[in-house]
Length: 195
Image: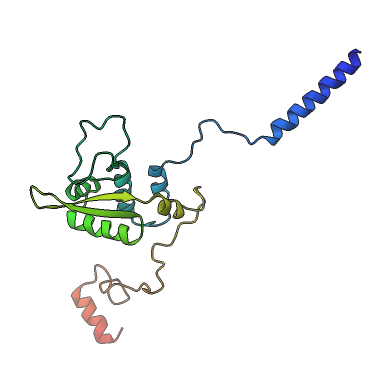
């Protein structure tokens, strides 16, 4: 009987081992990436860190859901609950956080909207008559723009890969005739000699 019990135990252990192999491994501590991490890993704006930084600030400034909205300010026309999921930071504050001018921030916000990364809604303050905006980051667009992989060997796009604008030397670039520390006299002699 002891051999039969041992045989059954071996079969049960083998079945348990097979079940354990069939289950997907759950890595402890691995969670889905949050939107702020996804923004940092997008392929778009590869060589434009200010654009990514502005998008990240919009994500971090987005209003979150909370239990009590009693003391929460909301612009006229919306309730505090309706502002959840939107960033209503002023352009001057965005400019200070990114470290650029308000004018440049407005251009970048327009480009982000044109590229489909944010939605902008405006309202006019009834007290001051000033136009204000709120911004909503479109997570689906951020998801669609993720790098295929994020490893040290990931190939990054070429900074100057626009085929419509081939790179050429600047007007003041060094050449055989235009060399640093070449005196005016030396340049004149070379030009006279036809070199």
